[in-house]
Image 1: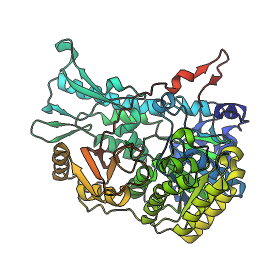
Image 2 (image 1 turned 90 degrees about the horizontal axis):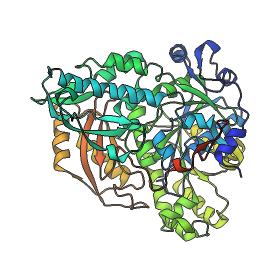
Image 3 (image 1 turned 60 degrees about the horizontal axis):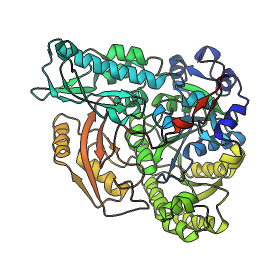
Image 4 (image 1 turned 90 degrees about the vertical axis):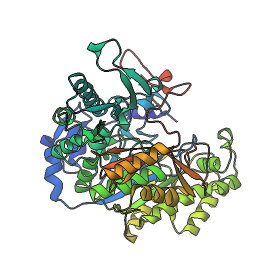
Length: 555
């Protein structure tokens, strides 16, 4: 079989105007970036608001393993399958970040015959949205340091600056830095830090903003530092929100592309789910719901992270009511959760699958807590055996959920017909969606509810710093906000080596900080980093471009 990039490069794409026509987008509402990708105008997002909303389908997954689960591939394949069944459908995905594209992943546009195209563009800069986030974030950083240099009228305590800098690349040496060296003309010396751009609160704000006015209001509320008397200092206090919004005005417009089978797809916004809230933009999702009868979207990493944040943060803020959820699992990944090493996953081992089932079953139980009907998508590999498959099917029967073989990687939409039919049947059951917790709970109560009910923790331990930060945030009036848990994606625990479905463990809360513009409190657990590093052999080593501009090595 051809590689993902070879399949994508051989695909015959249709002009983006034709794709837009399928869902009623007018030519004048497109802002084209070449023949195959376009932004849709904010005028479109306003025009369609009065149209009825379609059904929202969430695709999530079991806890990730090096074996791979295929969540984005399944999202694309399910959308293509629904289109084959004659449904008017759109797909909503996040934008890939250069950090993982050049680092661990090598690309994030689906795979095989269930991809979004143009694949290379999507993975490399795309329409520049993430660069706009980087620019807006760092403008605020520059204006903050300039304010201090020019007299510090707001009496900012330079020891309590909470707004660092960002870069859309995994670069561990920038995690902790010192700025302002070299004398008075170069600013006030202080410690600083870098995050990856997709962890920026600006990215979260872009993903939650309804329009330009809402964008500016949210940017103005960003807390950048605290004064010497302990009061929060905001981006609005240093008059940065207008210029930041100007840098983001085009980034706010959803990006329209197509799948290999010409299904319309919005790819817009890219927050990580392990260190941010892991969903594409509210504007893209809401617009798609007004344009299509069915919208398939994904939430990053396992359901303990991406789905929890989608259901507790995004749906809460956007008054979204998902109709069904799809949980992606593979026999290979279940074997890893059952204790088999990565190099032995092609050997049939039904007992290892059985030992790994608790991970899948906990994710299923968690999704049901939100009142959603759930379907398991069993993403098939050639090495999977009938005996192994039967173990999963039996477990799903006992759990009262449908399970469908998914072969969308090799067969595109055709390989997802069974899955699509099961999803439509689940939607017919009806959804009773509700968030896990109420706004009225304290921040600690929200953290502990997620820790116990979603992760399976027996206890939550707070570092003294975190204790103090949480109390201060409550005192400042931020206690009503939802919490965005930053935690390893590899485990229900905060220890990435603990696979399966551990119970009774202690979750370690290290730090808490408010994202006042986004509207949530970020809680850092264990040793999670907001600036990842590159692996020993980064994907960038294999990426190249020839004299004709053809890219290779991008998975």
